Length: 151
Image (cartoon, helix red, strand yellow):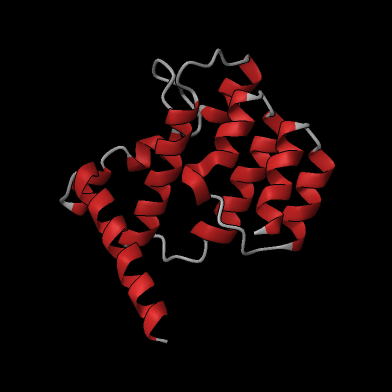
C-alpha cells in the first residue's frame, strides 16, 4: 500500500524516475485500486511518459497473468479502457497524450486504436452488458472478502 501512495506523490510531482523505480521493484501494485486513480492523475497532469510506464506495467503485471482469451483478461482490458475514457473527460489533451491514448481510445477514428478495436465488442463477446460486468466485479469482491474472513 505504501508504494501506491508513493506513486501518487511521484505522479503529482512528475517524478518519472521515482515512478519507474517503484514499478520496477514491485510487481504486485494494483493499478486499478481507487478506480484507476493513478492513470487518471497521469492523464489529468499531462504526464505522458509516466502514463506510458503505468500502461506498460499494467499490461506486463496484471494482464499478462491472464490467459488472453479468458473473460477475466477481457474484463481487465475493458477496465483499463473505461478508466482511460473517464480520465479524458473534461481534460484538454496534448497531442503527445492523444498519441499514447489513441491505442486505447478512438479519437475520431484513430488509426492506432488497436486495443479498442479488439475490445469494443466486449459486451457482445461476453454476452452481458457493462452493468452486468460491474455487478460481477462487486460479487467477486464480496466473495473474496467472505473467503478472507473464513480463513
